[in-house]
Length: 529
Image 1: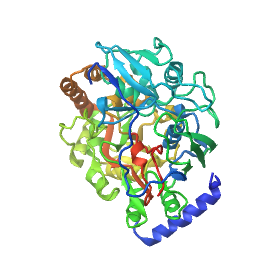
Image 2: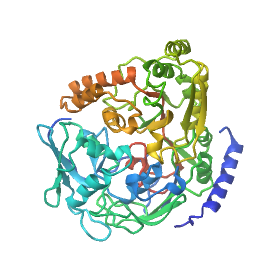
Image 3: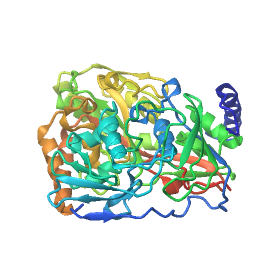
Image 4: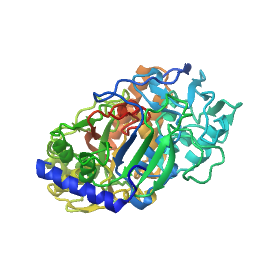
């Protein structure tokens, strides 16, 4: 690496720069779909693109818990690192046909009865050991590694496709039977999380064969990773010679690293930090745009009293002052939420009334439920900037309706590290990544999975399945909205705020937005000034 992965030295330099910052100011239908390799779009920043160089980027990591096994890595940095290293099936792209942009796939065919998806591999995709990607590799990555993951997002394949009956048809075709008719299987498979490794992979290590835009050359958990360009990458050749991804949990330290020249790009800044940096003419602030917004939320565990009572859940939704959160935490640069995820996606139920801030009604509901003066602990962590601040305000809101509420803050990267323990918490902070609404329900809620926090509604599951089986978009929208209405009325999730991911980069850095997936940036099209 151009700068050694010395955490102590790096953090000291970043912290000093952060002090300098603070001193300077206030801080679908059944059909055949094929697609060629995607051409890059215009960059987010002005500047002259040049070939070569090593771009350095800083992200929130998980300390010692960071892992190269991205199928079980809970932090954003684990997945960003993996996407630089491994090829993926595709990414969501609302502007593209079928809402997806393909990666190692050339296209996906769907049978007329929506019972079978056929994945067509792009010919000639090569691993770094010289071998060619085949259907067996894709099948192994989906049916063994993704299906065995502890993270809900990777369970999507097993929840929608009968992987026990999936098969490779030659070297360039994978046939996936569905567990039930679905019309949105392309969106599920191309959410950006499904990356591919070689058939039989057991250990994830530096030097293992990969087929992403970069080759991993160095990794230290809690510090960072170094890459060199993969000249055999199947897509447009990366412009950079190399890439460094650094793990820095603190937002001010990330910003300090940028202003001091230690890094060229930083991800997910705290609102106050971004506000300060916006006055720096040498830096561009690059927020994500709708629908790539992140829903900050609170989950009430319906397996634990008093959250098994609908009246208590409704009280906890009415208690939150959403406008105050947008105004005080995000300086107005966020959007009020309405207790549903996926704002901005076509299947979001935008026609439902906005839930009010009503302390008197909340108090009355608690009294009616016999839950006056209940004690609750809200567990949170700095998994994304603004998460702890919003949770702090929510605790104060709950106190105003008579709840004896307190806050427990875990270190960065620890909130979801033991997901089974997290799912047992009575009241927990969370965040929803930007994924279509019905897919989000399938990931987090359907079937009473641990991620559902006790929500078990087969009737709503059935409505979601019916909507997802509709090839007619109008009918799918109507049924999907009906399902979300029931979730809005009876659900156990408070979603008060949608915030952009606020990234910052040195003036003249370009192309990072060209490889955006969900809220996370990529670097296959990035260039230095």
